[in-house]
Length: 81
Image (tube, rainbow, N blue to C red; front, side):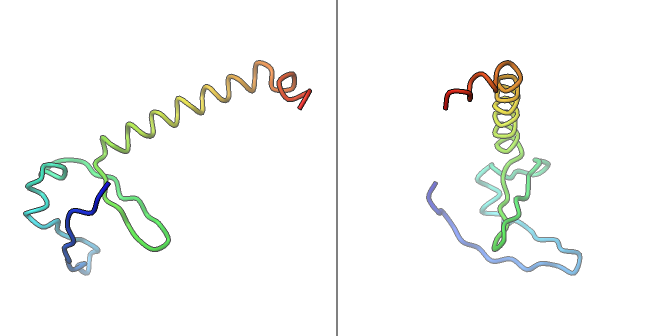
């Protein structure tokens, strides 16, 4: 993923920011679309909710598969290691 643009905005007293029009025109953050805000130690990321939801669904499916494997024979699987 390559950096395409850098824009500055001001945070209001209510903690609100506006996404500049030229960035909204790209379609990823159209009016009415849902976004997720990911918080890191040193930055925030805005991501389309559809993108985050797909990754969460994959993670949840993987977690379920791992739990099922552990229940069925974890002790047996790890015994000889």
